[in-house]
Length: 348
Image (cartoon, rainbow, N blue to C red; front, side, top):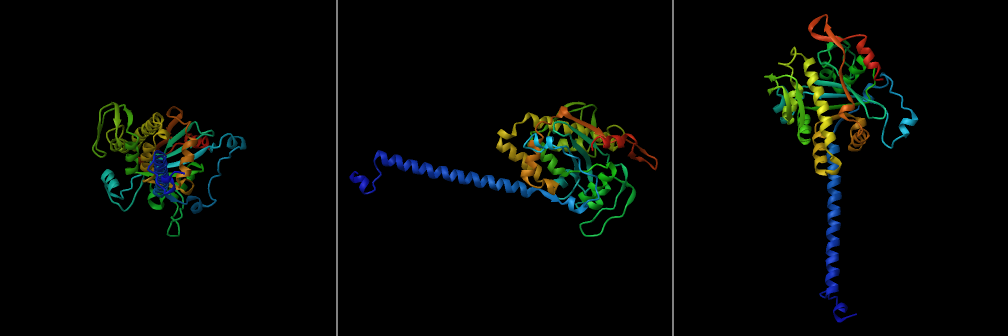
């Protein structure tokens, strides 16, 4: 041992190297701790964003049967692979500054502005998206209320009134009553969330078949190809005046174009190799998301997302529930039978 080493002097080349290694080790440890803390914060932040509703407990057992999952299908992949039916609602909630700016109106209530039943086939590589016109007249069943008690059965009610009077629980029960199909999950996104999602994806590409000039949605587009940002995409999803007969049926066609455009956009992005982009998309989605309790954590949403990696726009069929003009009101529609019943039966 040298005199310098005996007295703890590390000023020599060997000592300097050891000191540098210690500093590098401390820096690496610090970086790992910071990364772990950041990852933990991001996970809890995203999970905390999600609002959930315990629909299963609220509705109990008086519901259509769940789809049967064969053991071979379930065991073929470490990820879930059985068929699913998901009720997806676009809500016109006016609460919060962002939603008010995009939709305006009273913050005291909300309606299900868009309703789609998304059926994912076993294997999860194909899907059918069925739009339900909000102007459909239905028998709205008795629904439990969060405050206790229940709503009365109402015949000839507007479909979207279910959400207005009983929230997500009543929306699910009304859809199950109409379709006799069990909804495995519920997903709701509001105005601001949809616009933020489109912006986080860098916009979407949509082709319109006719000129659009709608004073209500403030959208003006010539027929042709367009790259839309979030505000424009939301306006397209809400447009009904100035296209077709001005009813909800014309708007549904535009909404289905957007569904495919979003799938196509996500297919072109490898978010798993872009953590910042993935976080931005996840934050945009979860911040305005309401789900059932089966999808109310980041792990559950990620598991669902990974199980759908084989699902592409060209494997997604978009249709509308067959309807005819309601005999009681020329401005409303009712399910056209037996075509509507046959469509729902194919999704069980």
